Amino acid sequence: MNTQRTLSKRLWLQRYLLILTLPAVLWMVIFNYIPMYGVIIAFQEYTPFKGFIHSPWLGFDNFKELFADPTFRESLTNTFKISIAKLVFGFPAPIILSLLLNELAFKRFKRIVQSLTYLPYFVSWVLVVGFMYTLLDPETGVVSKLLVKLGIIGSDVMLMGDAHSFLSLVVITEIWKNVGWNSIIYLAAIAGIDPQLYEAAVVDGASRFRRVWHITLPSLKPTIIILLILSIGGLVNSNFDQMFLMQNSMTQDAANVLAVYSYKMGLVSGRFSYGTAIGLFQSLVAFVLMYAANYSSRKLTKESLF
Image (cartoon, rainbow, N blue to C red; front, side, top):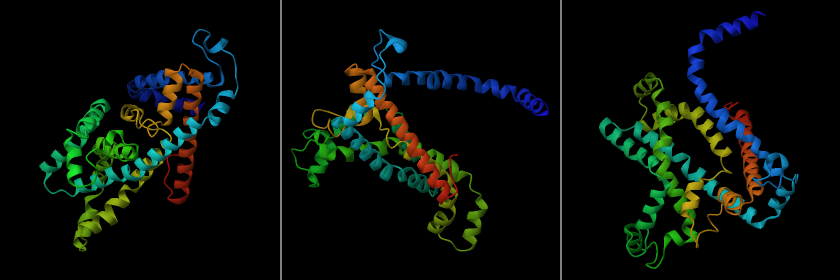
């Protein structure tokens, strides 16, 4: 009884905070948890006319077909290849940018750089890919002409139609678009570091590099680990907008990741159950990857999400 009274008293004292969070909770329940009931169609031969209840039950037949499908295995390989490349090259980029911005002495220049690096995040992938086609056009593209003059590519090479350069373009555009936005959390963590640590290091004669290496990076360690765990959990999920827009008749094999494959099979082909099975597989693999990364981090660094 005392525990219930204490809980009721705390809820009453925090009633205004609870009211403020209520819309966010309702939004999450309505759009994130209630739709999870639709996962059942992965085990059915679902048709919209029959609905969830009357659609024939297939059990694991969709998953058996999925794992036997060579196109699915190809899309899974492409997904991991692209996601790992983004993780290797894209994850350190905002850390490096935040460290460089933190070391800038001219505050006005720092704000300008921050604004310029944040801006691409708010640009639609439709516009980004459109600019890429314009800049990389073999006849009129500025970037293509520059690369030809430098001897990096031939004059007849169309980069947007080259399957070999597709991965590089995906990683470069992903970094360019998101590096500024992703650096915000690191800059916020750096701002929370005690200035007295830097002052003591200066007194001891530590150089800028030493201060970054022995103070800034260790202070960022918990943030880096948490974001790394989340990134590892997202290895099986690729950027659908980017992949779908960058694909064409010459790069569709390289761009065929799980998200695009699920869209084509589920919506374009009308195989809703098969597309849902792909999505459910992605979610399960993402959960396993995140749990494994979290467990490993807790054992090795004592830092974890849960």
